[in-house]
Image 1 (cartoon, rainbow, N blue to C red):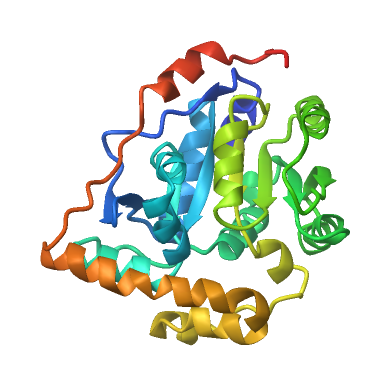
Image 2: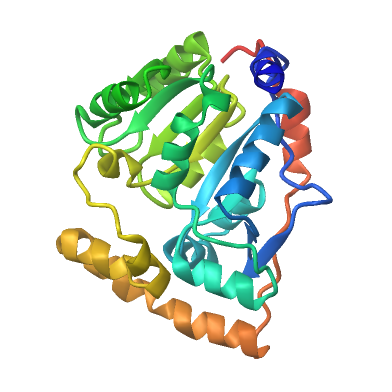
Length: 295
């Protein structure tokens, strides 16, 4: 209880931007993306440590799709490099990480991480804001989480249109979130949009930690069936998802086959994929955007 109070008390401190680099951050290098060598317990420990730091940041659940997108989108590569935590979302990321010597790595999917945080009494005093999903989904998700975990504190929900927000909509959203000051902001607008959105909005939003959780909104409202653990371990999570939503996912899965070629080049040493590091811009933002900032 004492440690929980410390976490809650820390939320009231200056909400500075979290530099992603730390000396004890073990990461697997997968095609240049640094993925934290954690399982679920390690991810929760990192989140707990982050809350106690008095800073703010964002968490990415990195899949094969996101890694491949980062090869052709430098901004996404920077976004991953400057995240607070990159959890291994997908069997291939776990396999490659273990091959590189990180035996402790295991799946930490966005939906599973979300569920663990809501269930964990240690985070029960944290408030939540839900951003994403189709019309009505965010509110339904907030209601379901409150039903499953009665201690849940819902700060608010927002369903964005199927396009980028215009300037006025974005200003209104920033004003709403900053007035509510949620501790956790859950973002479900798919990869790579959600990662780029978190990275861009980090200096503007008065929240403790943002999570890019993709399809978690649909998983936890019953629109998508969760993949059984044995299918995940066998590496067929993608097939389970494809069978449920073939119209939307078939192109992505064809695109994702390029991962096999790239990872073969990396693991055989035929091509180098240097792991991108955080840029000095992170520290500049930390100085320029303090608590109480006005936009």
